[in-house]
Image (cartoon, rainbow, N blue to C red):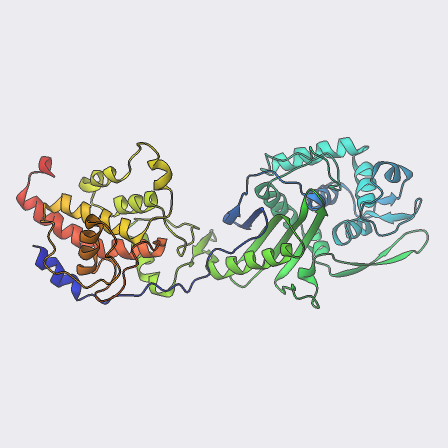
Length: 456
């Protein structure tokens, strides 16, 4: 029996595991998220549900509310109250007390130059007081699914009770960028601010270097952004980009300058290289995940076709945990054999922690070997012993398992280092199960002819 499946699988062409897809980006920010806004799919997250101070990215929500609740021609006056209630070290463009401007001009001052005094005066004009406007902010945030946020002012100057999360901010940004006027203003590189009564003109330049063609951080795909900064929050950034295959919204929170721009560009590159948005014949959008290496595409397609996996945003080049591997293994087994994989998830002691760590090549080899031995009652001696130069220091149990998976073509090659401590990626796991599945079926057929179901 053993020789039968060995002769079958030795004929397979072995494939080297080389990664060509875009891996998960190294993000310096303490919090970050990347979403596809049409389907609201999360493509990347880092501490996405942790609370951070938004600083002036607060003004994304402020501007959205003002656009929805205030006519663009509304006259706003720079008030003495803004001077008394907004800290003097706040960002501003230099409007004098008593000067008037339209709410449209005010929004340019808020989104391009992040003027805190304009934010205050517009909020008070809209709601009657800063507290009343903050109540509107919290209500609006809640309605958008930003349930872990709390806002106390319209401008984002630091307050310990003024916070949000990367996920919440992505939901706010998604709604804001869905507003045509918001997108237009947030994507404007330069604007000349004009007062109504004094003809005071103030040139404004967007603070997001992603939009500056002369900056090394310039990204021509970025269509809008809002920066933020104060000392407790560090650098924060909200941005949207449009690519041929997908639109993306990114949030970066709590990092140092200029890492907010580097992180955002890394997120956008990751998103456009690994995912696409497609619409079916009924116009229903869905995300296509192509974060796998080119060699892995047949295995991903096969696993999807067999329903071992569902369409997911998980990066196929990322490492897989033991628990994830066992769950994939279970999905690939015939229904009557699925219980055989249960013994590989052990809940004693600290095993739960270990099972959620990335799994190694030798651990995967042992799981496959033990499963097939249990299924077939096959002898443990390996009739064909391959030459594997780097396993002299592993235990005998691992050695037998490694000899087995190499001999059968499940994992590794003869006369080649096995790298027993190397980690298995998600795409490698799918290719292993692709090779393992016919052997299991072969064993299964053989066992059904020898044993009753109660003996399996």
